[in-house]
Image 1 (cartoon, one colour):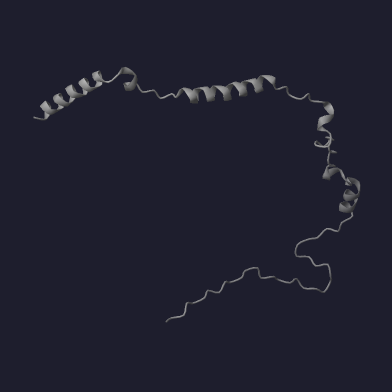
Image 2: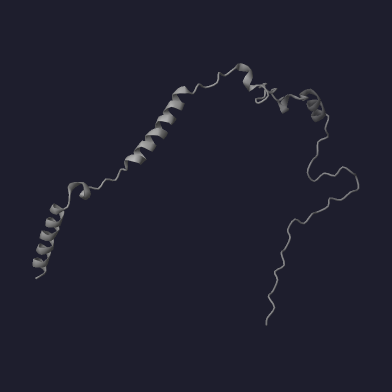
Length: 125
């Protein structure tokens, strides 16, 4: 039954389409006035692009906007500053021996480097 109703509706649609004039059944997505307006805008844009001339670049245009480049001085090597004086002071230095005291009567002081950490005991509730 459904197939018969689909055939019938197809046949009626075909008859209605044939009866209507051809110019009414045609649909277009492009409207002629919109096309003309788009062409006008496109033509104006292309004409302006063709007529545009870029300004000439001069060598003095960058002045005031760019700093002059100057190569920085090479840093002095810290090893070469005053080697002779440092060598003399090293040679005249008094030698320190471990365990020997500079004073005649002074006893060596023992230092305790071990520190014991105290742990906190959480309070019972």
